[in-house]
Image (cartoon, rainbow, N blue to C red):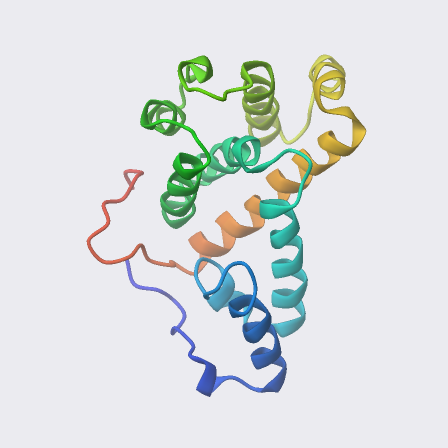
Length: 190
């Protein structure tokens, strides 16, 4: 797969692009990867998206371990190769085992309790909620009530924010054929 957009380096950027580039590379991410090369073509979009992404990835009340389940469910929905590749690694660093990653990739229910530190109720709820939302584009009253009881209003709104943001990421990566690093096997058959 060939990227539909040339990789930009800082020397090629105009001033508004450089400001966003510097915010991204000088922040917690440290580099331009994933959708950011595409988004730099629109500095206002890139700036807004990177700020939302920083919150969704690093600062929700859910924590990274729960967020990564929602992100991987979303990546699987769109068969977003790069999104899956990057976030499977992050999920492992957050404490998910390879068996969990493999089950999510296959669309199966992982045994979240098989890994130390798991909050099985919350992890299953994130999986169920994210799966229903990405499959149907909406949530049943029963699912809403159950998730609200587990996460509260703030946590539930943040979960929807994570899922929504990673829809944008997955679609951007797929629309512009953002390639996997050389030598990396595609997680999804095409």
